[in-house]
Amino acid sequence: MYKYLETTLGNTARRLWDDYKSTYNQKYLELVSAGANPYNFVNTVSNLITASDPNTGSIYQQKEAMRKLEQIKLNDWRKIVPFLTEFIHYATKSQNTYNKEVMNKLLLKLPGPLGIEIQEIGRIFIEKGGTNQTNNIITLSYYIMQHLEKKCNEVYIERQMKSNYEFCGKIYTAQQYGNPEQCGCNRKIKYKKNYYQEKTKQSNKNYKPRKKIFIRRSYAKRPFLNKERHVRRFNKDRQYKDTITCYACGQIGHISTKCPNKHNLHNKQTALINNTQMDLINITENVSDTESIYSIVSTIETESDEENLEEEPEDLVEALTQFKGFNLENEYMDLGESSRTTLECIHDFIRNRGNDDKPCYNCYLYPHITLRAQCKKCLKEICKMCFIKINPLEKWEQDNQNIKRINLYKAENMILRKSIGLIEERVELIEKDSSINYKRYWYIFVRDIWWKNIKQT
Image 1 (spheres, rainbow, N blue to C red):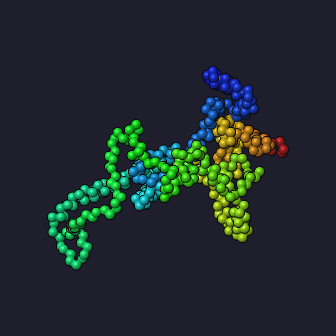
Image 2 (image 1 turned 180 degrees about the horizontal axis):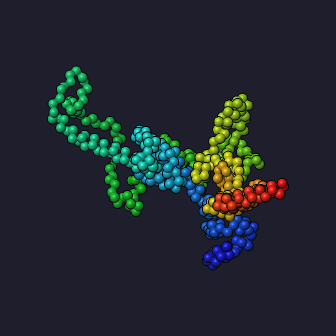
Image 3 (image 1 turned 60 degrees about the vertical axis):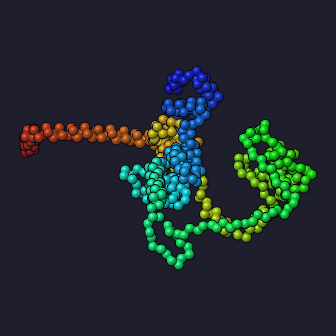
């Protein structure tokens, strides 16, 4: 089978496949032992060319889409349309269009009092359902847009009526007496009184009026910029009241343009590390190299934390027991087959059972039905090679022997049933013949008895 499939490959793909067989001979033999299924050959070739497994690639994309759904936020109602389109894109990519939890997340991300109003209506819409009882994330977003259209029409009507309320100034209304603050169309208009003030001469004799300079468009350009008029200079001899601090390094006495450390981009970080009064503790050997989080710990804080732990150990144990079963990765693993089955299922496999279209959950190969086993509880399927790695070889052979015995018993049972059917047919024929020749047989029987009696006498 594989030799025939190799002829369908091109020149470069054929050379790549021959190189794979020579370098990874053991994997090639495992693939051949799984059975003559073309899916295995196509998956391995695509993995060699694209460096991505088609079985696991979709699950990884679904996880990434679920993470992006958690990160999306809406702070301004003017961006509601791109927000909904992006949310629908990631929901369909993660295959959660009909998931009610994702629909409730969409309602919770709507901000403000308007979002609270839409949440109450949207939850009723999710529970009752539409006309066809097929609510999903797209119908919910369409329902939200319809509600927003109604709100926009109400605001438009209010504005239109507000502009037409000018006719109230021509209608006489009842007056209110005794109230100092009158409101409405007939309120009193207060006019400002302009008092005459004499101009006073300035007492400062050293006052010199500044010459006004009007900035033109030509001055704003670089070749026509006048530095004496538009740029403030820094004089070293002058004593300024406010202290000058550098924007780059934070030191006093110079500007960022004249900073000696302006080319050092990490000057603030180095200053922080040099000024810290903490001891840097080496990481122990127990911590793996793949840890992504490292921290700077002081000895004073660790001693105080140890004292607090010795005082109240029971509260910490209770808190840890409450959060023992929580795991963030399991929240994103609820895609397709649930993660609970993979973690909690104690597999009970049945040999020679399963579907040819379903791959092995461990190696993603498509084995033959005789080299396949299926779990009773979670309905996951495994090939013989992966089963041998997990379980001992004796179980598989014992089950095969039992299956052979059962097949023999079934064959013997079929033979016995056929023989019983033939015997019954013969009995029926004999009964028919006996009913026809009953008188003749009875006459012969009576004659023989009479002759025996005569001989005895």
